[in-house]
Length: 240
Image (cartoon, rainbow, N blue to C red; front, top):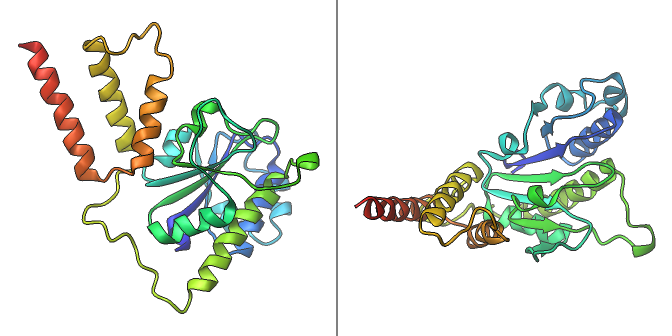
């Protein structure tokens, strides 16, 4: 299971937090670390804070955009500490771990910047938001501590499942990944503009809500192909 879970850190400011996250991951059996445009990396401070988890740092994948970090993922769970304008499916860390094991999909847990977390646009790329229920009077967690909480719940779920078969998705077709959903949304937006359903000058929240709809419905690759085919058919009819 650990090979199906990656930890994604976005625009981390302090390299020590990257090391702390790596240590938390190794404590709980996770190995795949993705760093999206870190402010300072590689770093001796990250190595020092990793305290022996240097193999995770050495194998970390560094990319420039969140899209690159998530492209081949099928389930994306983003950390969020506050309410959003558009409600999104929300889980706690234990429920998030249940999702990972129940679905058996390529999964990313996404952690935002130390000072302001993830942007609304970044959170809209997630199937679920996970909220760590800390006390309201002192709710801010260190990045390494937040990774530790998620990793711990994954480890506990793994131990509970150790004597039982871990059943992957029983669906007949593989789930669509993030990149495929992105292409679908780009195609849909193009057609909606052509049909004048969507005004590009006043888009409102139309496309974020379509993204939420598709991510909530958990499209498989055949369903996604059907939707792309339908949009292509509409484009052909409009040309006539």
